Image (tube, rainbow, N blue to C red):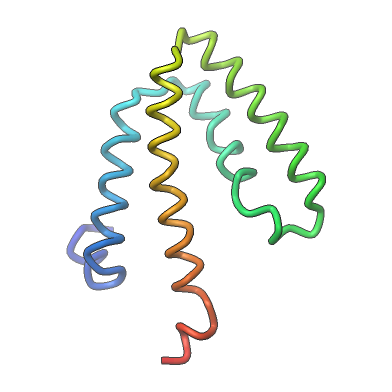
Length: 110
């Protein structure tokens, strides 16, 4: 999807946020191994209250966190890298909150 279409669908704020996230994410130059561990970590890091088996999701998140930290250590990632990555995920939190708001039934009745 190009920027023009995204602006029409999501507005300026979300579109700019998505492009900012993409740009910053790309700048981390993550290895294939880091990406392979990061994707399931992100999937398990969403709001567990929406899952039926919350305890299993919490355990998965813990396991993926440990594996992700291990892979980062293997690739020599330092504390500064982890802090910058954490800042990046603040954008994901904002995007998720906006997605939930856009998907809420009260918003769709308009």
